[in-house]
Every structure is written in structure tokens, then in C-alpha cells.
Image (cartoon, rainbow, N blue to C red; front, side):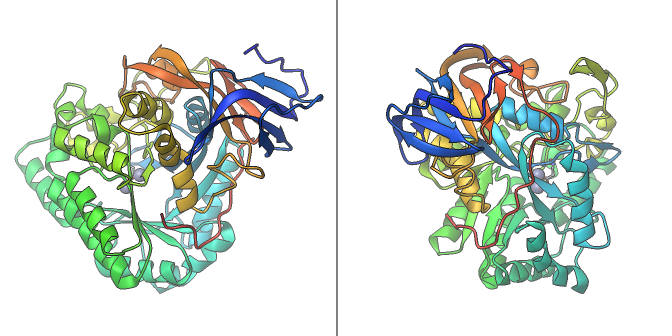
Length: 482
Ligand code: URP
Ligand code: ZN
Ligand code: ZN
């Protein structure tokens, strides 16, 4: 494809001769875009006044939807190092055009917390985004306020069974949130770990001077995750509520998910790329802090069960839980030519409980899943699109505006070069941090051009997006259960 001439009128675009890949099928077809929307799909389309993109040999996907990111999130004595601009840009380079971020409950009311978050995101967002509300403190007033979130375009609530004394709700409180959500067609999202055992094991580890990163995983046992998934599903069953389990990391959790779905509970699950490839051994490395996130990396056997669950359709969604921190926040990196350093993992050099929890990943998700999922025959191209775009769109009430290549859908499009081979790493990934977990991995298949509502934001190495061009996407309740 020729380089884009930036002064050309690109309001109408015709993408020719590519293979359109959706969650259902792959078909050779052209695609016409007008006023930010897909307006026609079919063979041999012709439009005299359109800017033509030749996509011969390329695959056309709906833009990726990452249902789980944390941008600009204050944690311990720092903040996650990507904001709505830098995180959105990294997402776009990796083929993702919509992000769903979490609003921390920082103000007296939920409305005020959302207003604060919307205010800081709107001028920086460079791709589209929606919001989930964290419910981390509950009283009668907060409970009553939950339905009004729908007027602010928020239909999803995240609750935590871990992070005692910080974010955790008690089971009875979670049950009340789930009932309220169910009564208004909202979806509860659950962080499933066993908070009490984590608290005890952490105290014991510190008392015994066990302070290295591997203790982050050793104090958060796998049985606790499986038990919490079981408990969460039981609460959802009791409340007749829909439930989405975030960041599944264990075989036991997958088993419980499967069992709940088998008995008709409306529960769905998400895993994240890191849990497919890495294990506790990575936390034992000298630079183990790079892998510290919650829930933690587990074993090879867990990796394999998670892969199998993606391939069998037992897990419905692949998010990233993108929540990056610098590995060494004392050393500046150059971001868009300017030096920047943000305190990061070094804060926990002497004490694993002070390592900010979280990993970079928003830009890695599609390229890594394509090479090691589709490329190695673990999932089909249809499943790839379903897991990274269409299913999150359906579950979170964005479909068919997003997550689809249909007439009337937003023209969020990835033109994917299945032949592009790269040695991946921190430079390619574009996250605003100083490391990448997949450093040096050989990838085959990568986005060539990415469009957000019909505007080209990425072409090969070139960034054509801008802060402020991303829009908040309000959602309506009663989304699909898949
Ligand atoms: O380590 C993580 N995942 N940090 C972000 C917060 C969460 O629990 O998702
Ligand atoms: Zn979580
Ligand atoms: Zn998270």
C-alpha cells in the first residue's frame, strides 16, 4: 500500500481486495466507509470520490476491544504509567480501538467519582472508551445510587474479594451489589481471590523476612482463586445476577466457571495474555518484579488449561488488565522525544507488598494471540476476532456499534498483515514504560493500518492519531450473555 497523503480528503474510504474476517466467517470483500461508519460491504465496490486502500493479501478485522485496562490509576505511591493518550496510542498500534477502563470510587458519590474520571480522560483519549465502576465501599446511599450510573453510560460494576482494607467488599456486600445490578440489567465483574488467606500469608511472609517478588505469588494461593470463583458464582446464582470473572489465572478457576455455566448460571470469564505464557518461575528471576500483578502468574499446567479453555470456548473474552509501571522508575525513557520517569516496581525492591501490581499489555494482546494462538493452530481466525473484539463488544453492550464489520457499525478497522514478521519488544509495543514482557519474541502477523471511526490512526510505524479524538461510548443495560 502506498504511503498516505495526509492532505488528501479521506472522509470516504474504500478498502479493496482484502479478506474480511469476523467472528463467524472469512470472506473476500470490499468495504466502504462514509461519515465514520461502514456503509457497504460487497464484491468489487466502486466509488469515484473515495480514497482507496489496497488491502490485497491483508485481513480485515473489527478493531480490538480491550475490556480491562487501568489508565492513570493511582496505586501505592505512584500511578500506572499510561494515561488515556499513551495507553490509547499503544492500544491502536496493537490493533485495539476501544478500551474499557475502571473508575476508582474516590469521591463521596459514584456520580462525582465518574465525573472526575471523565474530566481527566476526555482531552487525552485518542481512541474510544467506556467505563466500569469499581464498588469498593458500600452503604445504603451507594447502593441506591448504582442504577443512576446507567444515565452516565455505565452498566458494569467491579467488585473485589481481595485487597483487604483497601478495595475488598465482604460477601454479603457483594451479594447486595449483585442484586442491585441484576434488578437493573447491569453486569457485575469480579476479582476472585481469597482476601483473608492473602492477608494472613502476607503477614507471615513479612514476619519471616520473605520479601522477594516470588512471595507475591506464594501468598496468593491458586486454591484461593478457584475457591473465590466458586463463591462468586454461588453469590450470582443466589442473586440471579449475570457475572463476569476478570483475569482468570488458574485451572481451578476455569473448572468452576465451566461448572457454573453448566448448571445455567449466567457467568462469563476473561483471561489475559500473561497468564497463557508466564509462570511463578518468572517471579523468581532477578527482574521478577516485572511480572508482579494480581492475581499472580501460576504454573505451566495452568497456562495449558487456560489455552484449552480459549480454544474450547470455555473462556469468552481476552482482556489485558493493562496496568503498567516502570521497572526502574529512576531512569527516564524518551516518550515522543521527551524524557519521562514515573516511580514503578523499584518501590518494592525490599518488600514485595510495595511493588505496584500490574503489567503492560494493551498493545501486545492481538499480535501475541495471533502468532501463538492462530499461528500455532490453537484457535481459528474466527475465535481470534471473537475473543479480542466481538465477544467483549457483546458482553459489554457495545455490539454491533463496535466489534462488528457490518453496515452501520463504527468503522473501527484493523488491516492486518499476516506476513509481517517482527522481533517484538518495548520499542514496538509503544507502552509508556521501560520494559515489555514479550521482549525478543518473534511474531508473524501484525497490524498494518488501523482506523478509528473511519480515520486512519496508525499506518505501519506512523502515528496519525491525536489526543482528544477518542470518544466516550455510553452503554445501555441488558447486554448479551454469551
Ligand atoms: O495487578 C493488577 N491486576 N492490577 C490492577 C488491579 C486489578 O486487580 O485488576
Ligand atoms: Zn482485579
Ligand atoms: Zn484489573
